[in-house]
Image (tube, rainbow, N blue to C red; front, top):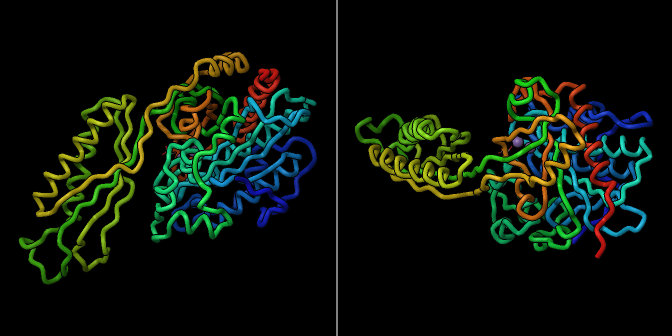
Length: 428
Ligand code: GLV
Ligand code: MN
Ligand code: MN
Protein backbone atom coordinates (compact mmCIF):
# COMPACT_ATOMS: atom_id res chain seq x y z
CA UNK A 1 0.00 0.00 0.00
CA UNK A 2 2.91 2.42 0.19
CA UNK A 3 5.35 4.12 -2.11
CA UNK A 4 8.85 4.51 -0.62
CA UNK A 5 10.62 7.75 -1.36
CA UNK A 6 14.08 8.03 -2.76
CA UNK A 7 14.61 11.70 -3.55
CA UNK A 8 11.98 14.41 -3.29
CA UNK A 9 10.99 15.73 -6.69
CA UNK A 10 10.56 19.42 -5.98
CA UNK A 11 11.76 20.27 -2.51
CA UNK A 12 11.83 23.98 -1.69
CA UNK A 13 15.47 24.99 -1.49
CA UNK A 14 16.69 25.97 1.94
CA UNK A 15 19.97 25.98 3.79
CA UNK A 16 19.46 25.65 7.50
CA UNK A 17 21.92 25.93 10.33
CA UNK A 18 22.67 22.83 12.39
CA UNK A 19 20.71 22.25 15.62
CA UNK A 20 16.99 22.31 16.30
CA UNK A 21 15.06 24.11 13.56
CA UNK A 22 12.74 26.81 14.75
CA UNK A 23 9.16 26.65 13.56
CA UNK A 24 9.53 30.18 12.24
CA UNK A 25 12.52 29.21 10.12
CA UNK A 26 10.75 26.14 8.78
CA UNK A 27 7.72 28.21 7.82
CA UNK A 28 9.93 30.86 6.25
CA UNK A 29 11.36 28.21 3.92
CA UNK A 30 7.88 27.63 2.46
CA UNK A 31 6.61 31.20 2.72
CA UNK A 32 6.65 31.72 -1.05
CA UNK A 33 4.97 28.44 -1.98
CA UNK A 34 1.43 28.90 -3.23
CA UNK A 35 1.04 32.62 -2.63
CA UNK A 36 -2.15 33.81 -4.30
CA UNK A 37 -1.62 37.25 -5.81
CA UNK A 38 -5.30 37.59 -6.74
CA UNK A 39 -6.98 36.56 -3.49
CA UNK A 40 -4.13 37.33 -1.13
CA UNK A 41 -2.73 34.70 1.23
CA UNK A 42 -2.16 31.17 0.00
CA UNK A 43 -4.01 28.82 -2.34
CA UNK A 44 -2.60 25.33 -1.96
CA UNK A 45 -5.28 22.91 -3.13
CA UNK A 46 -4.51 19.21 -2.83
CA UNK A 47 -2.37 17.87 -5.71
CA UNK A 48 -1.71 21.40 -7.03
CA UNK A 49 1.90 22.33 -7.77
CA UNK A 50 2.20 24.29 -4.48
CA UNK A 51 0.80 21.44 -2.42
CA UNK A 52 3.04 18.91 -4.15
CA UNK A 53 6.02 21.23 -3.56
CA UNK A 54 5.12 21.40 0.13
CA UNK A 55 4.90 17.62 0.28
CA UNK A 56 8.35 17.38 -1.30
CA UNK A 57 9.63 19.91 1.24
CA UNK A 58 8.22 17.84 4.12
CA UNK A 59 9.65 14.60 2.73
CA UNK A 60 13.04 16.22 2.40
CA UNK A 61 12.88 17.66 5.93
CA UNK A 62 11.83 14.31 7.39
CA UNK A 63 14.63 12.57 5.48
CA UNK A 64 17.18 15.04 6.90
CA UNK A 65 16.08 13.99 10.36
CA UNK A 66 16.63 10.33 9.58
CA UNK A 67 12.92 9.50 9.59
CA UNK A 68 11.65 6.66 7.41
CA UNK A 69 9.23 8.36 4.99
CA UNK A 70 6.58 6.92 2.72
CA UNK A 71 3.35 8.09 1.13
CA UNK A 72 0.51 5.60 1.40
CA UNK A 73 -2.18 4.80 -1.16
CA UNK A 74 -4.47 7.47 0.31
CA UNK A 75 -1.84 10.16 -0.20
CA UNK A 76 -1.01 10.41 3.52
CA UNK A 77 2.69 10.98 4.21
CA UNK A 78 4.13 9.02 7.14
CA UNK A 79 7.59 9.79 8.57
CA UNK A 80 8.65 7.29 11.23
CA UNK A 81 11.03 7.67 14.11
CA UNK A 82 11.34 4.03 15.08
CA UNK A 83 12.56 2.51 18.33
CA UNK A 84 15.49 0.08 18.36
CA UNK A 85 13.07 -2.85 17.95
CA UNK A 86 11.67 -1.40 14.73
CA UNK A 87 8.21 -2.62 15.79
CA UNK A 88 5.50 -0.18 14.74
CA UNK A 89 2.88 -0.61 17.43
CA UNK A 90 1.20 1.78 19.90
CA UNK A 91 2.86 4.62 18.01
CA UNK A 92 2.24 8.24 18.83
CA UNK A 93 1.33 10.15 15.67
CA UNK A 94 1.43 13.89 15.23
CA UNK A 95 1.02 16.17 12.23
CA UNK A 96 -1.52 18.14 10.27
CA UNK A 97 -2.06 19.16 6.62
CA UNK A 98 -0.39 21.27 3.94
CA UNK A 99 -3.38 22.02 1.68
CA UNK A 100 -5.24 25.30 2.20
CA UNK A 101 -8.55 26.96 1.54
CA UNK A 102 -8.52 29.44 -1.40
CA UNK A 103 -6.71 32.56 -0.19
CA UNK A 104 -6.00 31.07 3.23
CA UNK A 105 -3.44 31.93 5.88
CA UNK A 106 0.09 30.65 6.33
CA UNK A 107 -0.52 28.64 9.50
CA UNK A 108 -3.70 26.54 9.11
CA UNK A 109 -2.06 23.12 8.63
CA UNK A 110 1.61 24.03 8.04
CA UNK A 111 2.02 25.18 11.66
CA UNK A 112 1.23 21.64 12.88
CA UNK A 113 3.55 20.06 10.30
CA UNK A 114 6.46 22.43 11.01
CA UNK A 115 5.93 22.09 14.76
CA UNK A 116 6.10 18.30 14.46
CA UNK A 117 9.47 18.58 12.68
CA UNK A 118 10.71 21.11 15.26
CA UNK A 119 9.53 18.90 18.11
CA UNK A 120 11.61 16.01 16.73
CA UNK A 121 14.62 18.34 16.72
CA UNK A 122 13.95 19.42 20.30
CA UNK A 123 13.66 15.80 21.43
CA UNK A 124 16.87 14.86 19.62
CA UNK A 125 18.66 17.85 21.14
CA UNK A 126 17.59 16.50 24.55
CA UNK A 127 19.10 13.09 23.57
CA UNK A 128 15.63 11.66 24.02
CA UNK A 129 15.19 7.99 23.07
CA UNK A 130 11.54 7.08 22.40
CA UNK A 131 10.25 3.86 23.96
CA UNK A 132 7.45 3.73 21.40
CA UNK A 133 7.56 4.83 17.76
CA UNK A 134 6.63 8.32 16.59
CA UNK A 135 4.95 8.92 13.24
CA UNK A 136 4.80 12.39 11.72
CA UNK A 137 1.83 12.62 9.38
CA UNK A 138 0.64 14.90 6.59
CA UNK A 139 -3.00 14.42 5.59
CA UNK A 140 -4.18 15.44 2.10
CA UNK A 141 -7.31 17.51 1.32
CA UNK A 142 -8.06 18.40 4.93
CA UNK A 143 -9.90 21.50 3.76
CA UNK A 144 -11.96 19.78 1.09
CA UNK A 145 -11.25 22.86 -1.03
CA UNK A 146 -10.70 20.93 -4.24
CA UNK A 147 -12.92 17.83 -4.09
CA UNK A 148 -15.55 19.06 -1.62
CA UNK A 149 -15.05 16.48 1.15
CA UNK A 150 -13.04 17.79 4.11
CA UNK A 151 -10.48 15.46 5.72
CA UNK A 152 -10.56 13.26 2.64
CA UNK A 153 -7.27 11.48 3.48
CA UNK A 154 -8.18 10.59 7.06
CA UNK A 155 -11.72 9.62 6.01
CA UNK A 156 -10.29 7.20 3.44
CA UNK A 157 -7.76 5.82 5.93
CA UNK A 158 -10.44 5.11 8.53
CA UNK A 159 -13.04 3.75 6.10
CA UNK A 160 -15.36 6.72 6.72
CA UNK A 161 -15.41 7.54 3.00
CA UNK A 162 -16.33 4.96 0.39
CA UNK A 163 -13.40 4.70 -2.08
CA UNK A 164 -15.78 4.46 -5.06
CA UNK A 165 -17.41 7.71 -3.99
CA UNK A 166 -13.98 9.31 -3.50
CA UNK A 167 -12.72 8.25 -6.93
CA UNK A 168 -15.72 9.94 -8.56
CA UNK A 169 -15.45 13.25 -6.66
CA UNK A 170 -14.84 16.13 -9.06
CA UNK A 171 -12.92 19.36 -8.65
CA UNK A 172 -14.38 22.67 -9.94
CA UNK A 173 -12.77 22.00 -13.36
CA UNK A 174 -14.56 18.64 -13.61
CA UNK A 175 -11.49 16.44 -13.05
CA UNK A 176 -12.15 13.34 -10.97
CA UNK A 177 -10.18 12.56 -7.83
CA UNK A 178 -9.10 9.30 -9.50
CA UNK A 179 -7.61 11.10 -12.51
CA UNK A 180 -5.91 13.81 -10.47
CA UNK A 181 -4.45 11.28 -8.01
CA UNK A 182 -3.17 9.13 -10.89
CA UNK A 183 -1.58 12.16 -12.56
CA UNK A 184 0.27 12.78 -9.30
CA UNK A 185 1.79 9.34 -8.95
CA UNK A 186 -0.90 7.64 -6.84
CA UNK A 187 -2.81 4.52 -7.80
CA UNK A 188 -6.47 5.44 -7.23
CA UNK A 189 -7.46 1.74 -7.33
CA UNK A 190 -5.71 1.29 -3.97
CA UNK A 191 -7.41 4.04 -1.97
CA UNK A 192 -9.57 3.10 1.02
CA UNK A 193 -9.52 1.85 4.60
CA UNK A 194 -6.05 0.87 5.81
CA UNK A 195 -6.51 -0.97 9.10
CA UNK A 196 -2.88 -2.13 9.05
CA UNK A 197 -1.75 1.48 9.23
CA UNK A 198 -4.37 2.35 11.84
CA UNK A 199 -3.40 -0.58 14.03
CA UNK A 200 0.13 0.77 14.26
CA UNK A 201 -1.14 3.86 16.04
CA UNK A 202 -1.79 4.24 19.73
CA UNK A 203 -2.81 7.90 19.69
CA UNK A 204 -2.77 11.08 17.60
CA UNK A 205 -1.96 14.62 18.72
CA UNK A 206 -2.51 17.49 16.25
CA UNK A 207 -1.11 20.94 16.88
CA UNK A 208 -3.00 23.71 15.08
CA UNK A 209 -3.24 27.47 14.97
CA UNK A 210 -6.24 28.56 16.99
CA UNK A 211 -8.96 29.76 14.64
CA UNK A 212 -10.66 32.06 17.09
CA UNK A 213 -9.93 34.38 20.00
CA UNK A 214 -9.96 31.91 22.90
CA UNK A 215 -6.25 32.24 23.73
CA UNK A 216 -6.07 35.96 22.95
CA UNK A 217 -8.86 36.63 25.42
CA UNK A 218 -7.07 34.82 28.25
CA UNK A 219 -3.59 35.96 27.15
CA UNK A 220 -2.06 32.48 26.91
CA UNK A 221 0.09 31.03 24.11
CA UNK A 222 -1.01 27.38 24.01
CA UNK A 223 -4.18 25.45 24.86
CA UNK A 224 -5.26 21.82 24.93
CA UNK A 225 -8.30 20.99 22.77
CA UNK A 226 -11.48 19.55 24.27
CA UNK A 227 -13.97 19.18 21.42
CA UNK A 228 -14.81 19.94 17.80
CA UNK A 229 -18.20 21.33 16.86
CA UNK A 230 -20.30 19.00 14.69
CA UNK A 231 -20.32 20.23 11.10
CA UNK A 232 -21.32 19.33 7.60
CA UNK A 233 -21.59 20.52 4.03
CA UNK A 234 -24.70 20.59 1.88
CA UNK A 235 -25.14 21.49 -1.78
CA UNK A 236 -28.29 23.38 -2.72
CA UNK A 237 -29.21 23.56 -6.41
CA UNK A 238 -31.83 26.10 -7.45
CA UNK A 239 -33.12 25.63 -10.96
CA UNK A 240 -34.93 28.30 -12.98
CA UNK A 241 -34.93 29.25 -16.64
CA UNK A 242 -31.86 30.49 -18.46
CA UNK A 243 -32.64 33.45 -20.73
CA UNK A 244 -31.48 36.73 -22.21
CA UNK A 245 -30.82 39.65 -19.82
CA UNK A 246 -32.03 42.23 -22.34
CA UNK A 247 -35.09 40.65 -23.89
CA UNK A 248 -36.71 38.96 -20.90
CA UNK A 249 -39.13 41.25 -19.06
CA UNK A 250 -38.82 41.29 -15.28
CA UNK A 251 -42.30 39.77 -14.93
CA UNK A 252 -41.38 36.83 -17.16
CA UNK A 253 -38.27 35.71 -15.33
CA UNK A 254 -37.57 32.53 -13.36
CA UNK A 255 -34.23 33.70 -12.08
CA UNK A 256 -32.45 31.31 -9.68
CA UNK A 257 -29.97 34.04 -8.68
CA UNK A 258 -32.81 36.06 -7.15
CA UNK A 259 -34.07 32.94 -5.38
CA UNK A 260 -30.52 32.22 -4.15
CA UNK A 261 -30.25 35.75 -2.72
CA UNK A 262 -33.48 35.26 -0.75
CA UNK A 263 -32.38 31.80 0.38
CA UNK A 264 -29.04 33.10 1.67
CA UNK A 265 -30.75 35.72 3.81
CA UNK A 266 -33.12 33.07 5.11
CA UNK A 267 -30.20 30.75 5.98
CA UNK A 268 -28.66 33.52 8.07
CA UNK A 269 -32.00 34.29 9.76
CA UNK A 270 -32.77 30.62 10.44
CA UNK A 271 -29.34 29.97 11.97
CA UNK A 272 -29.78 32.98 14.25
CA UNK A 273 -32.77 31.25 15.83
CA UNK A 274 -30.57 28.40 17.11
CA UNK A 275 -28.17 29.30 19.90
CA UNK A 276 -24.56 28.35 19.04
CA UNK A 277 -25.45 27.55 15.41
CA UNK A 278 -23.29 28.68 12.50
CA UNK A 279 -24.43 28.56 8.88
CA UNK A 280 -22.41 29.89 5.97
CA UNK A 281 -22.71 30.14 2.22
CA UNK A 282 -19.11 30.59 1.14
CA UNK A 283 -19.42 29.44 -2.44
CA UNK A 284 -22.06 30.09 -5.06
CA UNK A 285 -21.92 29.17 -8.71
CA UNK A 286 -24.39 30.44 -11.32
CA UNK A 287 -24.70 28.26 -14.41
CA UNK A 288 -23.69 29.24 -17.02
CA UNK A 289 -22.51 32.47 -15.34
CA UNK A 290 -22.53 35.46 -17.71
CA UNK A 291 -23.18 39.14 -17.04
CA UNK A 292 -25.89 39.31 -19.72
CA UNK A 293 -27.32 35.87 -18.99
CA UNK A 294 -30.15 34.97 -16.61
CA UNK A 295 -28.77 31.82 -14.99
CA UNK A 296 -30.55 28.53 -15.55
CA UNK A 297 -29.29 27.12 -12.26
CA UNK A 298 -27.40 28.24 -9.18
CA UNK A 299 -25.45 25.83 -6.99
CA UNK A 300 -24.60 26.98 -3.51
CA UNK A 301 -22.68 25.18 -0.80
CA UNK A 302 -23.83 25.52 2.79
CA UNK A 303 -21.61 24.85 5.82
CA UNK A 304 -23.67 24.26 8.99
CA UNK A 305 -22.28 23.69 12.50
CA UNK A 306 -23.78 23.12 15.95
CA UNK A 307 -22.63 21.32 19.12
CA UNK A 308 -25.72 19.06 19.12
CA UNK A 309 -26.05 16.87 16.04
CA UNK A 310 -29.90 16.67 16.18
CA UNK A 311 -29.99 20.48 16.16
CA UNK A 312 -27.75 20.52 13.08
CA UNK A 313 -30.18 18.10 11.41
CA UNK A 314 -33.20 20.24 12.36
CA UNK A 315 -31.49 23.41 11.15
CA UNK A 316 -30.61 21.85 7.81
CA UNK A 317 -34.16 20.60 7.40
CA UNK A 318 -35.50 24.10 8.05
CA UNK A 319 -33.01 25.53 5.54
CA UNK A 320 -34.18 23.03 2.91
CA UNK A 321 -37.89 23.76 3.52
CA UNK A 322 -37.38 27.51 3.36
CA UNK A 323 -35.29 27.14 0.20
CA UNK A 324 -38.06 25.24 -1.56
CA UNK A 325 -40.68 27.86 -0.60
CA UNK A 326 -38.47 30.81 -1.59
CA UNK A 327 -37.44 29.15 -4.86
CA UNK A 328 -41.10 28.55 -5.71
CA UNK A 329 -41.84 32.27 -5.15
CA UNK A 330 -39.44 32.94 -8.04
CA UNK A 331 -40.81 30.15 -10.25
CA UNK A 332 -37.79 27.95 -9.46
CA UNK A 333 -37.21 24.60 -7.77
CA UNK A 334 -34.64 23.72 -5.11
CA UNK A 335 -32.96 20.46 -4.11
CA UNK A 336 -30.62 19.90 -1.21
CA UNK A 337 -28.02 17.09 -0.89
CA UNK A 338 -25.52 16.20 1.85
CA UNK A 339 -21.85 16.29 0.86
CA UNK A 340 -20.28 15.42 4.21
CA UNK A 341 -21.21 15.24 7.86
CA UNK A 342 -18.99 15.14 10.95
CA UNK A 343 -20.62 14.74 14.35
CA UNK A 344 -19.43 16.70 17.36
CA UNK A 345 -16.24 15.12 18.72
CA UNK A 346 -15.12 15.15 22.34
CA UNK A 347 -11.45 14.28 22.50
CA UNK A 348 -10.36 11.35 24.63
CA UNK A 349 -10.51 12.43 28.30
CA UNK A 350 -7.62 10.19 29.37
CA UNK A 351 -5.24 11.54 26.74
CA UNK A 352 -6.35 15.10 27.49
CA UNK A 353 -5.57 14.57 31.17
CA UNK A 354 -2.10 13.26 30.23
CA UNK A 355 -1.46 16.42 28.20
CA UNK A 356 -2.56 18.50 31.18
CA UNK A 357 0.11 16.72 33.26
CA UNK A 358 2.76 17.54 30.65
CA UNK A 359 1.56 21.15 30.27
CA UNK A 360 0.60 22.17 33.81
CA UNK A 361 -1.87 25.02 33.90
CA UNK A 362 -2.55 24.96 30.13
CA UNK A 363 -6.11 26.09 29.38
CA UNK A 364 -8.55 23.71 27.71
CA UNK A 365 -10.54 25.07 24.76
CA UNK A 366 -13.03 23.75 22.24
CA UNK A 367 -13.10 24.71 18.56
CA UNK A 368 -15.60 25.31 15.82
CA UNK A 369 -13.14 24.20 13.13
CA UNK A 370 -12.84 20.70 11.69
CA UNK A 371 -9.61 18.67 11.80
CA UNK A 372 -8.23 15.25 10.86
CA UNK A 373 -7.92 14.69 14.63
CA UNK A 374 -11.74 14.75 14.71
CA UNK A 375 -11.99 12.01 12.09
CA UNK A 376 -9.32 9.86 13.76
CA UNK A 377 -11.04 10.28 17.14
CA UNK A 378 -13.56 7.56 16.25
CA UNK A 379 -10.69 5.06 15.95
CA UNK A 380 -8.03 5.98 18.51
CA UNK A 381 -7.45 8.43 21.34
CA UNK A 382 -6.79 11.85 19.85
CA UNK A 383 -5.94 15.25 21.25
CA UNK A 384 -5.14 18.73 19.99
CA UNK A 385 -2.97 21.65 20.96
CA UNK A 386 -3.91 25.16 19.84
CA UNK A 387 -1.45 28.02 19.39
CA UNK A 388 -2.56 31.63 19.92
CA UNK A 389 -3.64 33.60 16.86
CA UNK A 390 -3.53 37.31 17.74
CA UNK A 391 -5.99 38.31 15.03
CA UNK A 392 -8.42 35.53 15.92
CA UNK A 393 -8.99 35.28 12.15
CA UNK A 394 -8.50 32.16 10.04
CA UNK A 395 -9.29 30.95 6.50
CA UNK A 396 -8.04 34.38 5.54
CA UNK A 397 -4.66 36.00 4.83
CA UNK A 398 -5.08 37.79 8.20
CA UNK A 399 -4.47 34.58 10.15
CA UNK A 400 -1.38 35.09 12.32
CA UNK A 401 0.95 33.41 14.81
CA UNK A 402 3.72 35.36 16.56
CA UNK A 403 7.17 33.77 16.31
CA UNK A 404 7.49 33.34 20.07
CA UNK A 405 4.13 31.57 20.27
CA UNK A 406 5.07 29.26 17.41
CA UNK A 407 8.19 28.19 19.33
CA UNK A 408 6.16 27.84 22.54
CA UNK A 409 3.78 25.58 20.64
CA UNK A 410 6.62 23.36 19.38
CA UNK A 411 8.07 23.14 22.90
CA UNK A 412 4.64 22.19 24.26
CA UNK A 413 4.31 19.53 21.57
CA UNK A 414 7.82 18.22 22.33
CA UNK A 415 6.98 18.06 26.04
CA UNK A 416 3.78 16.11 25.31
CA UNK A 417 5.56 13.78 22.91
CA UNK A 418 8.37 13.20 25.41
CA UNK A 419 5.82 12.19 28.02
CA UNK A 420 3.85 9.94 25.69
CA UNK A 421 6.85 8.39 23.91
CA UNK A 422 8.66 7.79 27.17
CA UNK A 423 6.15 5.14 28.13
CA UNK A 424 6.88 1.53 27.24
CA UNK A 425 4.81 -0.14 24.53
CA UNK A 426 2.22 -2.47 26.01
CA UNK A 427 3.29 -6.10 25.48
CA UNK A 428 1.42 -8.40 23.10
C1 GLV B 1 -11.61 23.38 8.27
O1 GLV B 1 -10.77 24.15 8.70
C2 GLV B 1 -13.00 23.53 8.61
O2 GLV B 1 -13.31 23.76 9.79
O3 GLV B 1 -13.83 23.46 7.70
MN1 MN C 1 -8.83 25.15 7.76
MN1 MN D 1 -6.51 23.02 9.47
